[in-house]
Image 1 (cartoon, rainbow, N blue to C red):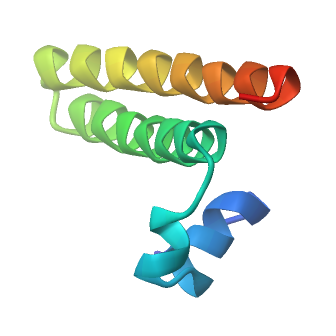
Image 2 (cartoon, rainbow, N blue to C red; image 1 turned 180 degrees about the horizontal axis):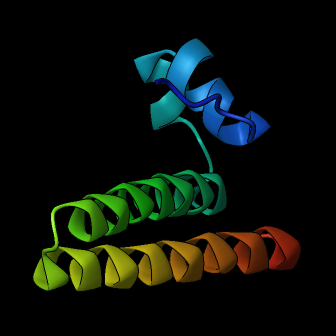
Length: 83
């Protein structure tokens, strides 16, 4: 079952952005998008690890989810500071 993408920034990048637009994004926006994608990937890994009873995959997913949220916050801070 497919999940809906609710974050407008991720939706724009996944469905509407062209390669040229992605290349011209500010680094803060790139960090936010990459962070959100890592969060999603981490959540998926975590759930697959739970279902398959694989603690290593579950912990990898948790770590990737945390690193994604940190990267997203870095992008938000850069945006506020104007970098």
